[in-house]
Length: 613
Image 1 (cartoon, rainbow, N blue to C red):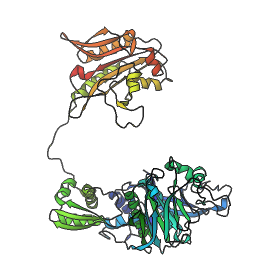
Image 2 (image 1 turned 120 degrees about the horizontal axis):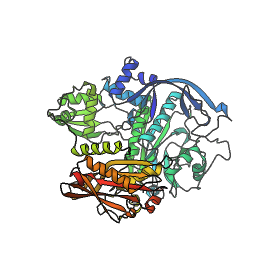
Image 3 (image 1 turned 180 degrees about the horizontal axis):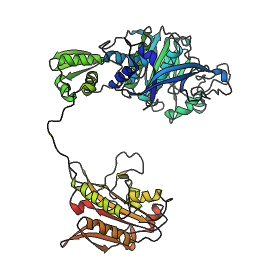
Image 4 (image 1 turned 60 degrees about the vertical axis):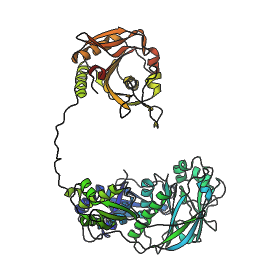
């Protein structure tokens, strides 16, 4: 998880009373934050593009601006030291993006500490602007159709506010936008546009030119095409993958043709926010309306927490004949069972007590009857998918540290599974013979499990419907592929090498789950003078430790040299069970696994031998 630094001053001045550092850390941990501690950071500002970065005392100042790419070595006057900032460092809680900044985090703490309860109210003014969305944005040529916008006026900017706004943008890009893939945020100086009418449309790769953020507008060569942005601008190079395969690129402009941004890549220099900016036009664009709407709600409510004097207005979004107004602060309403909440959390409570707990977590709650409440969750909460999430909120408000541990009503005594006892005996035996145990992946591929071993495909192997790579397309039916791959990656080590594994193989069955696991032991030895007799000796010792004798019968097995393979039978009291195979590996198998020395292998099915799984 990314680690962020929340300025202590901005956080504590939004709370009532004085909290000691230890108390602050304790309360943050109680609401689910993973706190690393306090630190002092230096803030470095690029005066060319306004980007602010924070570095620790031991870090050297940056030599390049990550936003505009300016070289501070050549232009040292553009790098300004803004001084130190005392922060509390904590990991981002991905499911709670509403706590990514001092304003949103203070809002949650105020409720938890009962300084304010219930859902906060934010004044939302009538629409001041209108955005027309080109229907072509929903086609395969430029599939990024969703947009949500807001207008903020009466904004007062300073370096602290600008830095928190930039941090919140990037953190929301990570948590909700999935690194801008599903949502990206733009904040612009409203006064640099006509302020009323905007267009969100696809634009050809070389259809127009604009000056991207950080480029000098006085430079005649600063105005570049969208394609050049992807090829030349630092942010374009970083995020060009998001537009790969697009026939046209997204563009946000006003009705006079002033370019605001090329989402999700870069804003224009003409609409850049400066210290003199007093009004924002804010947009979130992406692939899904719900994501961009929720992202906008989180952003603008946090801004209003950071600066309560901001006036927020809606923007009309026109999709064909449909007009939406964003942001939309309509609450998410769910009904919650009081007995179920008490049962799931282990906290005795009635409806009144549940209302008090949920009020502390920022919800408005209405009692419908003694067993049911109706919860209106604020629009900035992105993590509430079903009533269980509200139960978790109630438990957090009560405090996990306040829940009294109790023993379960039914006591049982654990014991070792019989197959694990057998496996332990096998491990002790083979390690006692000087072999090294390995643990390999249960995922393999048909190419390794069948083709490389010269074996016909297993009649009931389990294949993956959506494999993550061509090397992991099935569950193994033999331990051999993993053992031989282990030798492949250890080719630089001293020979001979002797490795074994005790592990699961899998096959399709008619059971309720559709598949069954079988426990097996396999081993392979490689070196200059290696033969089948060594692996037979290990197989014999293993069976003897389990109370069985051994008989081997020569057989033409595809993985082994002709005349050098055998089937293993376990023998006891006149009973014979076929349990495995052994032999000297065929040269084609050695070549498939890039092995340069002779090798011998054995494998025994312990489930067949013992009847245990």
